Length: 216
Image 1: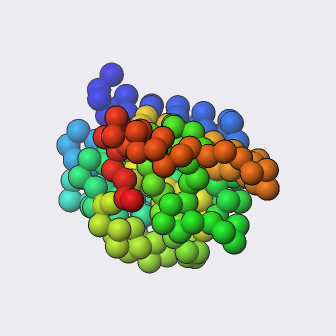
Image 2: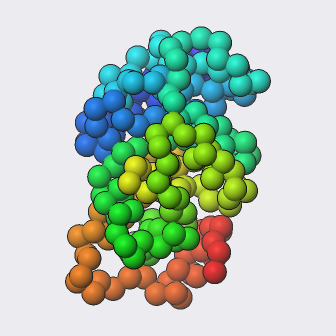
């Protein structure tokens, strides 16, 4: 099996796993990954994560031209913005995951550090998450908002919509967005219970040990 064929299968396998566990439903969510030649494989518009066809993924060449497969997701500006601003981005995933969307609607949601520091893994795998305002689905302004971060964040939360995460490869991106949703779920479960978060010293220790980009 060629490297691209293997990547196609991996994209569809991981997408189905997230769909089967209720992390995104219906025809929501989109996923993309870099190919060896610098192009992209992208989930088509209007498709379900539970039923992606490896042979019908949208294929872009290294210049950004759509050369094969079905019409890509309308959220391409989001994906392109991460690839253009983060040189190490090898994949981008966007979900409509329930708990992270719920957390984005809370009046006290932190715009600059959306995920509360509840576990080490949210910090290690996701880092700081920027909460962006609501945009109409498919609005190119979402991509411009990501570009405005100048590559400083690997993850953003679209208010009332869903998270978007870039990773070094498709497995890393999927792991990170799942960790984002798990942390958001914990945050919603613990609301009003005066839960003990990680201390500033705990966070500093994690950031130092695992060489995490972090803004004080």
